[in-house]
Length: 197
Image 1 (cartoon, rainbow, N blue to C red):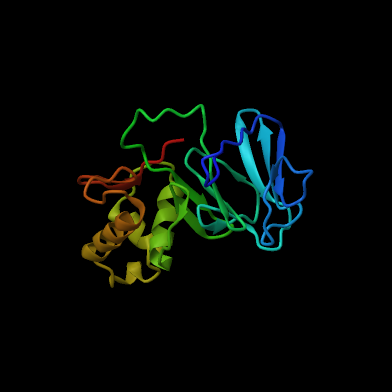
Image 2 (cartoon, helix red, strand yellow):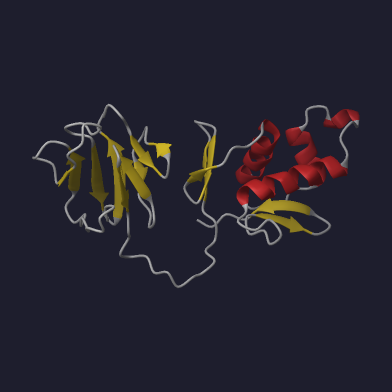
């Protein structure tokens, strides 16, 4: 993990504490930082960031940390007025166009792509949830219509409306909507969500 001055802070112990008090592993001398502000916990090969009920919060990629969150290479951690960048030594940067990482937090109704929150309309969220629940299965336009529009059976929904909804969702999720990697069209059959585990 590097700070704005380029100083490297190694996260080699099971628990790394961050705060204003001198007892912390990483000390930040700022009034915007609580005495015991945050900690990074190691569990096997995984590292998790937690807020220790700080006054001004901990932010991971501009999103406030409410529950512990796993760190991934390139994550930006904001504590007070200091931004750290996490570098995972296990990660190699060979792939220039990585597969987008999709996270759906159904309990909070939050969708993230590559760790960044993505705002979705209610219908976009319904479509994404429906395809996600199907676990990579191809879903026909009829199935999508019934899942997303309650009035579908009455005949008030047309193919172009489903196609437009898919197009809008792609622009929210895909790095390049013209070459989708997540929301795939299976010609003549329908659509599927391609999520790598």
